[in-house]
Image 1 (cartoon, rainbow, N blue to C red):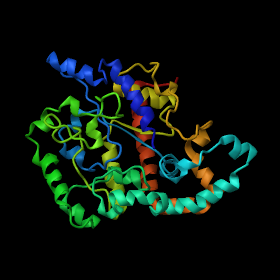
Image 2 (image 1 turned 90 degrees about the vertical axis):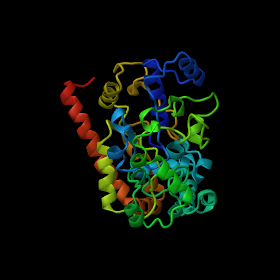
Image 3 (image 1 turned 180 degrees about the vertical axis):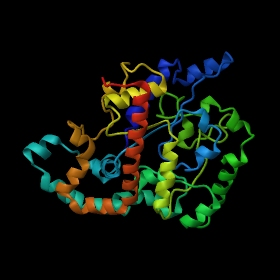
Image 4 (image 1 turned 30 degrees about the horizontal axis):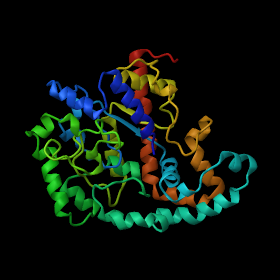
Length: 361
């Protein structure tokens, strides 16, 4: 819920501009001619990243790294309406703002369901049945249910015994320990899985039906994709447990290592669109530029700048202040992290502007 679908389609256009097809049949034809694609595409949307990965994973320096973030409250409420209990309550702008025919109804719905969703009760309980309590999970699927400090956890993962102890994760499963031993760069610096990545084991090549390559759905390809999807920082790490400001510092340190740090609220603005185009080596005025892309996965289309940045916070402030207060308290560290991420975005953008003498559209 941070603009991933819009960026995914943008990256597909970027790769096609560079002559890389996303069709798996095209991949096999290229392979049969003895040529491997020169560009590989990896997504990491629902797993935590070891914050020290850039220091350990030899693939990191060989990659262009792009990350997109969103204000935590906006992202959480969007998740509530997209995959949580709110998906049954379609927000109609005309009824909500002009006719005001269901303001009281939506307020009651939010006041009743939002606290339950945050506790993973009610409709959220099915995820407890599938994955267990947060503290019992290690590197499992992060999205689709409420996870406090989501984006902070995603970038402040750890894979060291000291961190496990500090996080009070408890006894790790043997499966996790085996996966970590097998995939951590410390134990695999000299293996082919890191020196010779297999293009088919990325997210970009896929069949007609799945959105991603089957590797991303937990279906490990036998043989070629022995370890599943192959990309920087895809080895297991821990996201759950107690967080403090040291985790904010570690996440920001990891964030600094990305080539582009985007914010969903602004990535379609001219300077951000041109910046990313330069990073990825495509024309700034390409038909698929971010400035010309329509939002494709928004529950509610935003009509002005205020709505782009504050739509859900304004909604809760007017209709369910208790939910807004609960979210703010539980996600205070993620909010602090996001504010620092905004500074990183501005600094990287300003450095690019000075380097390119960017004067605006």
